[in-house]
Length: 295
Ligand SMILES: [Zn+2]
Image (cartoon, rainbow, N blue to C red; front, side, top):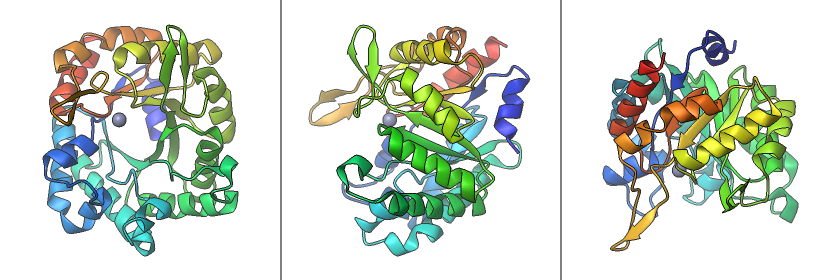
């Protein structure tokens, strides 16, 4: 059952969570360390992140499984632990969410490109299938296939999720802006191209994550809405464009600055609003406040 889409049908705007990667780094994740192994080795720290976002007012929480596919885990010698790691990720987020909030199983790119012949479609499909089934077994309501830039990989992931789980399927791609009006992924896919193809493939919620702050996300949302008036749109925006200072990446937008654009984003057609890189529970608290003020 598509519980999130049902909630949206009642006209609600829902609030999603904020960044995981930057939060894990603040808790001591080292460069070169496997973030997903924390689900097994440091579950309390992962639970603390999930709880922070629920406490901040998020209606849904992702899982610490962005790089939990067999290709990414093989880099750490963990390809044989995909099921264990993803199941644990979903169980931790379910614990934070309770029964009234939604758990979104995070599925990121594999790093393999179909077009380049890095991988066969079958290998890619099986990798997504394994991860998706483990996330569902751990308690995910929905699967969020995110940070995608290649349409073929995104569609393969959607197919694997659709054919092997009964989870709701969300798919978001990451866009950059090449000039004032043109957004495209690293692989050249525009929001307009993405829209029909992801829906055809079986995604019930689509959108954009990472790469942009709210300002650019307004443009992306408008472009999706010109193609499709009704598909629910999820936006996970960065806290502005990253800046590099003293060898560290810094995301400049404050909770107030992001909160100030929530109304504009809702007017553009966004239905679920949350954060990506650089956003914190304070950002989500502010976003939730604005969403609820606009009811
Ligand atoms: Zn991000």
